[in-house]
Length: 186
Image (cartoon, rainbow, N blue to C red):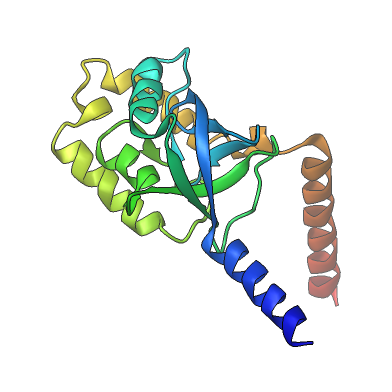
């Protein structure tokens, strides 16, 4: 019994506090692959895509920070474990530094406030400071184009919904309206 409890406590600690892994390949400014082949998406940030303006710079910056290094991956207590592409959603910690936040504070990614995560206010403040000091994206001559692309991604909520989710949501709204009509009519 005591051994079982010890295993459960170790497993809980492992899951809650994260895992350590080696980064083998950076895919873009907010995604990388580990030595086990697992793809990881940095939670709370959104970097420009490789094909977008500043995408190559964001990828290179993340590569310089973590590629071929051993990092700690930490979960977020209010976010999903994986995204819709089945990538792990994690905070990346290297030598005590929150790499996700560093990408934002150094101007190579945006705070991705479209989804809820526990460090959102810290990341938002990091973005404000990066913007005020013209770091990275914020100092680029094409920053308006980059910002417009980011805003499109943040406001495309309905585009992210699957047809089934859209149908179910519409059905719920219709049922609420019918219920409200029935209630008022009484």
